Every structure is written in C-alpha cells, then in structure tokens.
Length: 489
Ligand SMILES: Nc1ncnc2c1ncn2[C@@H]1O[C@H](COP(=O)(O)OP(=O)(O)O)[C@@H](O)[C@H]1O
Ligand SMILES: [Mg+2]
Image 1 (spheres, rainbow, N blue to C red):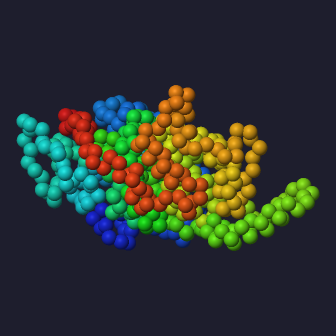
Image 2 (cartoon, rainbow, N blue to C red):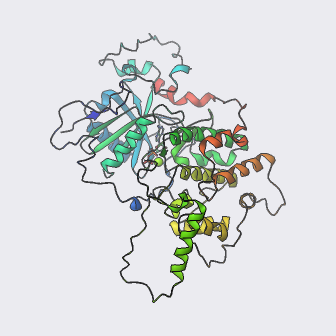
Image 3 (cartoon, rainbow, N blue to C red):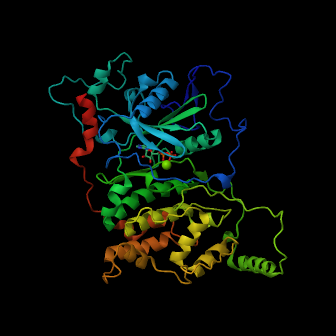
C-alpha cells in the first residue's frame, strides 16, 4: 500500500517541514531521518558522475508541443508514477518526459490545484500576459474557490500552470535525496535558482515538485551567441551562484543541462542540487590553504623523500589513499577536484562556468572530452602548459609529470585556442574587442589556482558582465504556444 509524505506548500518557514498524510506503514522511513540510515553516504571518491548529454530534447524548446505522441514506454512509466501516490491525478496531469539524468527522470505536468496553495515560488504570477480566449464564458475564479469536484474542462479555462516533477531514482541514497531537498529548501528565495515547491514520498520513491521552467537545449543556441548574449546568460548564472555561494553551498555540477535558459526571455534558472554540498562539511586541511612558505617547506620534504632510492613498489601499500569528493561531470571538473584537493571551495563552480564560456567562445561542445580524470588533466595541461599545471598540482601537494610530446611547457593562450577552434587562425583574423573582453573574463574564471580565481560576486562586477545590460529582453510570440495548445483541447 502506498503511503504519502509531502512537505506542505503553505508553510514556507523553517524548519524543513515534512507532513504525513496517512499513518505510515512499518516499511516507511521518514524523509528527515538521518541517523537510522544504513545506507551511509557513498564514499565521496566513488561519487563520480559521468553524464552524457541527454538526447531526448527533440525540438529547440524542450516542451515543444504537448500534442506530440508520447512513446508507449514513457506513457507506461507515467501511469506508474501517477498510481504511486494516492490523489496524484487530482493534483497533477502528467504531460510528457522532459529530461532524463543520472539520478532522475523529469516530467512536465499541469498543476491542477495551483489555486489552492501559496504560490510565492511562481515567477510569472505577477506579470501574467494571458487573457481568456474569446467566445468562451470565463468567470475569474477566486483563489480559494477551487472545488475538487471541478471538471477538467473548468480547470482548463484558467491559464494552466506547469510544474516539473523530478522522480528521483530509488537507487539514490536517502541521505543524498534529503540533502538535495534540504538545500533546495534553503535556497528557496534565491533569484535564478529553481525553487522547490513540495516533495512527496511513497515507500522508496521520492518526487520533487519544481516550477516548470521553459528553456531551450543549449546545443540549439550556443553557436549563435554574441558576446552580449554570453554576458546576459552568464549574469543570470552568476546571480544564482552568488546567492548559492553566499550560503556556503557548492553546486558541484555546473554545466549547460543544469542551467535552464530561455534565449527569448533571456532568463535562466539553476537546477539540480543532487551533488551539492555545504562548504567545509567534508573538508580536511589541504596545503592549498597554507601560506606559500609553509607549503614550499612541506613540498621540499615530500620531494626529498621521493628522491630517496626505491627498491620497487610495496605490494601492499599501507599508506592511506587520498580521498576527496570528485562528484561532478567529466569535462567540467576544476583542476583542484582532479588533484583531489581535500578542502574544495565554491570556486570549483566558477571553473565549470569557465568551461561553459570556453565552449560558447570556441563553438565546440563538448569542449573537453576526456574518458577519465587523468585524461582530463592532460587536456587541461595541453592548454595551460606543463609548467602551470605542475604548479597547480603542487598547491594540493601533488606532483604532475608527463612525457606526452603534445603537452608543451608553456601551453597556449585561450585567445589562440579560440581562434583555432573557430578556424580563424589561418586567415589571420583576430578576436573582436568584445570577444577579447570575454576572453579576459574567461582567464579569470579558468585560473588554475582557486584562490586567484574570480568569485561570483566579483564576476558580477566585471566589465564583461555589464555588456548587454541595455539590451531589452524579447518575448517572442511563440512563448505561450504551449499554454494555448492546452486551451484548445
Ligand atoms: N524546473 C524545471 N523545468 C523544466 N525542465 C526541468 C526542470 N528541472 C529539470 N528539468 C529538465 O530535466 C533535466 C534533468 O533535471 P536535473 O534536475 O538536472 O536531474 P538529474 O539530477 O537527473 O540530472 C534538466 O536538464 C532539464 O532538461
Ligand atoms: Mg542534471
């Protein structure tokens, strides 16, 4: 028998509120029980996420038309999901699958009981442009007048409200699920961060309900972006990060599929706090936080020891292995994550934004394409050169050596890399002034030393992010197509 637990929507104050609708069966564990969890956090080192970019976003806009035929298997999964929770069908009308990640499947659904709740999360409610279609009798419904017996036809006369239903895979550890929901709850008032509306649990199945955010697949627009477009995109992303980082939270998985962006309205929201963590919680001191003199002394001692004569390697190495959180997506991991820094900071997210900007400027996606962390280090070393990479490793007490001939000592400037990748190096073309400013900003995001890397707050003050501030956001006519499709049903 399915039971249901959900965070009440009306109560938005602390603490994180979990409500049981019916008495739990003996099988159930409450979502906020930390202590009883046998399934302790996976070893941080194992927590490696190797994501391929999803291919299910068939059209430019992820929602396209609701009329499209939903694949039989997906339909079956949607039925199953709707049957998992008592009363689900009265609350939500599942429309289609909009995303499939490593830890979840996300569906678009209509929020049938929108009017019954506090909707302070709704970014659009104050500037609704929709007016009822002509020739249909429409009486404005008072927000409290919703009657559960209303027919679907009546519900559809109002502007439909959509949510994204994130069905978290049952294989995710309860600790991780709770961590994601708690962080989202803490971040509920941050601009550009997609807030949590509510969450439900039935036995081991948890779903998070988020406001639906219309966005376009990154691959559809990034090649067309001009420097002012990039600045607007990044300002939105850094606005989110500034709030997240001010709360000492590391997102850990910044990449295009986790920043939902609508090029028409030039609005974006940060999603997916599945790998996020609080700064310092899992940390152990790393030499990167020592003063440079102390670090040098430690390094010399380590180097001295490593130069002592070796008689091969011990079969059973009893030295403790270095454990550090490496969660994230390949190609977006900061050098300090690759070097297993044990005291990572919010700066890891800034590096990942740098990778996004490098992708846009170079018109290549994915820009980094390594199979593992060692290859990822080689890719970074190819650009920045062995010398700087060696220094970056030393910050965290690591030696970096390679005999790969393509990894030069000095590396290349990012400007050169961008000219090459956009096929302009042979023609003698140079970067435009705006692009040069973007590259100057990119250099600040891709500093190998996290302590020198720009912070989100500093980024928001950078001249590059002031670019395009005057450009008016466009609202295309098609923006409300989806809503209209439903009205025609
Ligand atoms: N609030 C939302 N509105 C619209 N689409 C969403 C929303 N949240 C997630 N998605 C879609 O689902 C995908 C996966 O969601 P995400 O939270 O990143 O899950 P995962 O942890 O599985 O990666 C996103 O890339 C996006 O396409
Ligand atoms: Mg994701």
